[in-house]
Length: 83
Image (tube, rainbow, N blue to C red; front, side):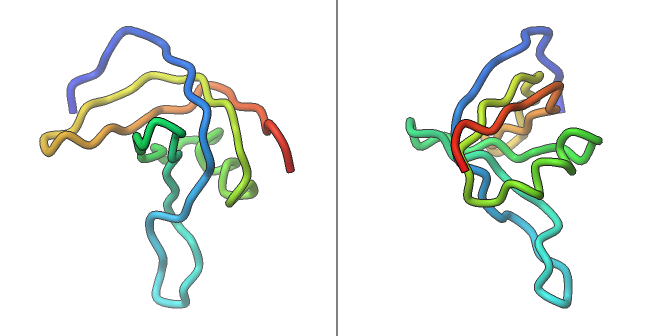
């Protein structure tokens, strides 16, 4: 993936994206009100977002474009908008 140098702020809902064999959520995405989805990369802050499934969050991080038009975000920091 090519890295962007820009830090972005997105707001959206944390949704499941990947599961293990026991149906435990192992990967997540942020779904925005603009119908964009950002796959959350597996770093410390990205893993902490797993605790906020189905909650609205504001995320600050760097976006990495994929080959098929998908976007991934490396989370620098986040805040929960409502619980």
